[in-house]
Image 1 (cartoon, rainbow, N blue to C red):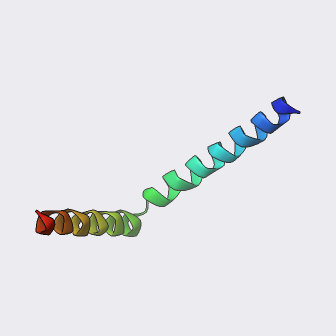
Image 2: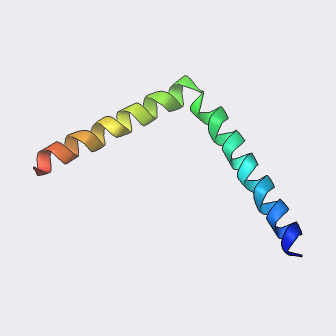
Amino acid sequence: MGLLRGLVKGAVVAKVIQVAQRELSKPENQRKIKDGLGKLAQSGRKKH
């Protein structure tokens, strides 16, 4: 039973990684991430 559970977890993790890579390759998602990181960096600077 443990082996089967391990195989299922491995398959789920592989699928999540596959979907994440596909989404990150889209230019609109890259722009959203870049904008979000810029906002985080700005808010971090304002606190100091």
